[in-house]
Image (cartoon, rainbow over all chains, first blue to last red; front, side):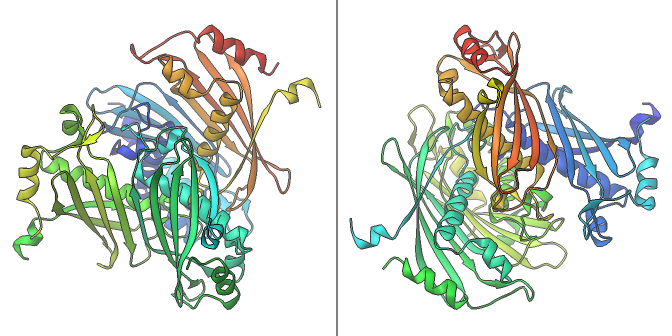
Length: 142
Length: 142
Length: 142
Length: 142
């Protein structure tokens, strides 16, 4: 295991009935619920939970999201969602995700969420506060 | 057609892939998205759109919801959602729904949503404002 | 703690951003995702996971769902979902839910899901298989 | 208006309460429900509705999805979703979306969905059937 691997955050989840569709597999949009849970817990693990952002007058609206679906995910599949900081811009934050099917070890999906730090009062983007930036840089993938 | 029937509001919708699950039918919780669209458009048809409630400092959080599923709804089924005012309490509003499968005329589901008028500043329930009450009474089922 | 209490199954969950709406609280329909996760894990705890139902040719479509909302649930609130077998009919199964806000101990919601055992091939309701019935009876609330 | 513009399909929709979150804006994942409705109706407009794909033994699972959020979408905003065929590969189909806020004419979001034609029996990708390909080529953006 490289130092880099030790920086990744892992979140376990499971595909629910509501996540599936008539294809008998996951509906592509349901994956984002699992990525969001992983993201929220990742930030909490750094002491950067969203409630703290909100209290300080910031939010992190998405400006870009994407996902690749590599192998089918079905009802009851257990997944491991790996989260990494891919990039910290002046005001943007890019998180990368890998979704592993626990039973097979197969990589089932990848995702990327780009948020931009917003000042809630002005509704405008603003530089990521220094304390948040520093905590994120500690775990950034290199 | 009785006078009563003429009071019902009808909203057309269609079951989408995201509404279905591995059973190949609608996921029960997805029905509520269709009821909500019907409810919103019903209130708009009376000039009582939610944006007006919010502007005046009110919201209508749910205190009770229920649904009965009478016949399967599947991907691409067109539905007619009928909305009626079932009861107007001091601060509560009960809406009733019937979902008809358009192709067969079959009744596929029934629903009921009970909301309570809330003063957004205090977070407490408050009597339904007179103007809203009067408009709702005009179309109440008897 | 009564013997009855020891029969209840508990599932911990957390309100996510996707569960909330413009009211800043949970959207009522999002509660059902948490009830479903609790239900699935409850059945698994009895060795009755849905995958076993499907393999044996059965499913459990909902015929009735309901929920009462007693106190606001907001983003990041941790909840304990208690599941109980309320009633086992010839072919129907009624599960009852209580949702407790962990921080305050407050009861935030109640729910009820009624499913009917269906033979997947015929699409018709069928008596709950004896092995499933017996396992459910072991934990039924009295 | 160029010939190209006339090839785009337009679908009107509206942001619902369930689409919003605690930020008071749309939850990013909710946009995909609107894109999906537009996609389904676009294919229907060409006589290529998914029910026909399924009947012929094909499905179109997603291998990639992405979206850019350019301006806030809020509860009750009416949107126009424009759909275009961006690329028809051997077995893949790329659809592009633009979401316009009707009140302001502002472009609020862009999206892209890449599906791959799958033989349902084998679970493997397969060339897009000639009849479907031809109908899609008629409306492909150049």
